[in-house]
Figure (cartoon, rainbow over the protein chains, first blue to last red):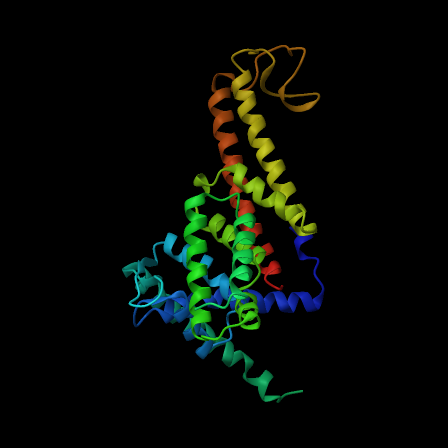
Length: 126
Length: 195
């Protein structure tokens, strides 16, 4: 375990950002499906509009697979009128519950942290 | 529809992906590749005149086959219940990581040692009926032993329960190692994401 921690400071901060991004990505994917069923690329477009969460586009597909395996999402291949079939995802009842509770947690978490950061970002104090 | 310069590039990409995922079950792999293919086609259809450059850009945005295959494997290890993941698949995944650097190597060693301990408990349970005097829990001058040749004197501790204890402890070691690896994988994953 100790061996895994010997990163430099720059690495550590990048790691922190990557971890934060990864943690939020799951919530963002679930939230993007709140209104209606979407396929992978549509989810990516929603995420692109609202955030800069995604680094490599392909990596959302394994995450979608996991969320499905966890019972939060359901999926189905749908033939398009023109072109090729697409795999649509939607939230299950469990998934809807989960995204609500994640959303609440996020809100109170972010509010507390913003409060804490106020003096830091206002540049007051020392 | 698609530019002729584009197709070979896409085929190369997907055969590379296929290679990187060759250790995974074929149905899962095919389903996953099909979804990624749909993604690539959609991206290119937005741009009817897609040439080699556009194609390259779409595949680049997708991520390298290696990166995606790794992510896929990691998510799989994280979802499957620990008792449904075979130690062999963990060892295979971590063996690949062990070649990529120091952290990977450390994770692999943890897995290897953990499973070897589990295995040695199972082997002890198997040997007990054949060597009842040699195999048993003993705390003596040599410290704690589980098997000794020549056979020591006296009755070993908890001798009647030796086999069930070994099976339970072996199983717990196996499960514990899998869970520990999963924990470590989460850490390593965040390191890998820096790419």
